[in-house]
Image 1 (cartoon, rainbow, N blue to C red):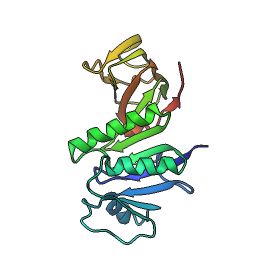
Image 2 (image 1 turned 30 degrees about the vertical axis):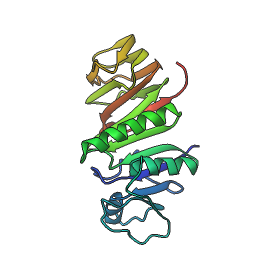
Image 3 (image 1 turned 120 degrees about the vertical axis):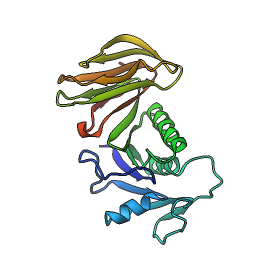
Image 4 (image 1 turned 135 degrees about the vertical axis):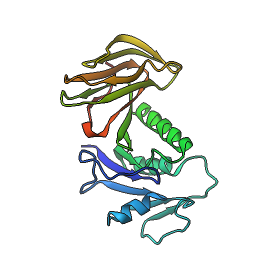
Length: 218
């Protein structure tokens, strides 16, 4: 089983999803201001990391990693990189949506880069879940409801299938300059999002939990 990591940032955080909550053996990292959220829950992170511009103070912690504010990566990206070195393969990124729009976009790029490395990562907040899938598929149960949107992350994505949804695609091509996959709907059937070549960003209501994921060429 792949080792799981939970990163909590300073953006929107409305608690852990039931299907994506840290358990025994999981690595929990507070990225700067995310430390306050964990303190409110009465939980100490395994690692406290960041430049601490959000907290405005550097707390005492037995595993503190302090970065200069003059850096090329966000605290969320630095936390994810640390977790990869620790052998993690599944990532739940909380507090990475809402707040500053530039950081939200940076975290979406982070998802894309992780998917291209074959990593499984979810960006969770504000009642929504996002993930990127590269050359693979996501399968949602027939109990899923509400909206689902799909975006091309890159110049183009080939061999895109959307089945079991209100609007379907068969062996389609998506591009980065047209939102053809936005605002689809679950209809009470098992549904599948599949891409043969390229990377997709998929977004859905958090109430639906997590899909079954398959990687590799379809």
